[in-house]
Length: 259
Image (cartoon, rainbow, N blue to C red):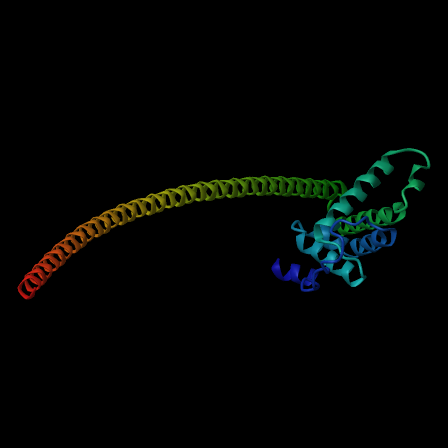
């Protein structure tokens, strides 16, 4: 089976579309015709293979070679829309088919498929109805597979939303933790600043008391010095007066002796 898929998907290594291309652009008329031409070319492989993911990858790669950059899922979704519209046109009456621009391409694809089924059933000796029933069962299985893929995609989206919400909650928690730590840091900084200010005031108060004490000691020393200076001047004045009195007494005696 792997060898068969590799043979059906020889373009798996084609480079992906450039980032500048729109992710979901509108399908053009020429682009849709190229898709139908490639789908008609690979229709036999689609009917013979249940797992058609490699075939849609091959379809996408062949479109890329034509200059149309589409993902396998986009090709698959567009084909499903075309099939749904074609079946609605087939069940309608009148000339409504003329309003569907790809009616002839879709009709040829399904007509060729039915012709292959008829030839295959004739060669194998089986009834056409049995093969058609098997083909319908395969289509139902394909639809179930697509539904499961859709559920898986929806589950993936829900997980992505959940991861996004969890990431947002983690970011909010991180921001709250950051703000809490920032507030704690600011509080510690304010406490440290207050402690430094209190220490500075205490040092200034101690320095003021020391300076006042030194000032008082200096004033006391100056007072004692002035007192000692006054006592010294008083003693000198007293000695001077005694000398003067003694000299005057001697002069008086000398004056009385010689007079």
